[in-house]
Image (cartoon, rainbow, N blue to C red; front, side, top):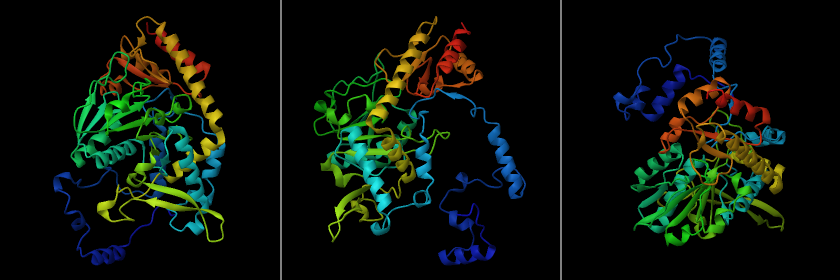
Length: 440
């Protein structure tokens, strides 16, 4: 595909004539003028392509984050990506693939999609999964809409200790659907405190682990909900060492699949995970690949279910999502296949052990303590004498953490977010400790 395909004035004229508009501006009349930007967008004069390339490259080289050691968390994590992932993704028959409408020429794509769904079910303890969604936030929002359609309830219970960015997406979806969102407070252990379920609830959302890194207690939650859904948003790597949500009666399990073989990439691209119980299969958004036999009795794969507006009547559609993060889902499939269950468990254990080692050392520094005393996986909230100053000193030392402002949005103050994966070395842990130690 060409990087830039210009339209000539003649092209534009023909297109405007076809849609019945006289000018390009007329196409945007539905947008209030107060919301439209007038004039140049950059303030720069027109330049040739080579100048623009050099200019943008120079801007990128000014990035203060390009050399930082990522102890970042909050939903995206710096795990090692095996070379085989990039190798498979770079194959031409895969990186140009889109929706496999024609099964007879899409067996490779449909096969890995089936494998992706299977591995996701094994991880989550659920019965069916779709072939991915945009990201973890939209997957959670779609899960809530599914619960609303099934139960008829109009209230969603959401933990305060949920990622603020995920919460923004969820709030937007709920506003559009006319749903009420009620917060569940967290206690001193950082975990949500569920005290009674009000009438009219369609779903209770739990994050596992939550935004503060704490492992939630899922046992008994479903028993309190009755017909309301238990929706669990997971870190998939954590499921290598934690009991799967399906064991606790979860109705839907969603999550952000970025930790499964997808680089951080300054916040994208991402991968939405969505798994549920068989009874909700036809209410599940997205696409499902299925295995079948052809007329000759040979095994083959087909697109078994597509409950989106493009394929069925609008009033019966579960979602208007028009694609999925297929290439990212392929990356996750290759990653999981390459590591296997034991390999993923090793990644989870190494991350957890290093995180607990660092937390122990930091708590030995005067004035530093864990902000939550609940159990955590590989991420924790660190309370500091001066969190702003600590974050600044760490950044100057080349270390990136989740800043105190991010936690403040979730109701936790004077704390930094620290995530540790298997990639963090002993030298990097030493640098982290010595940087904060030097400020005391």
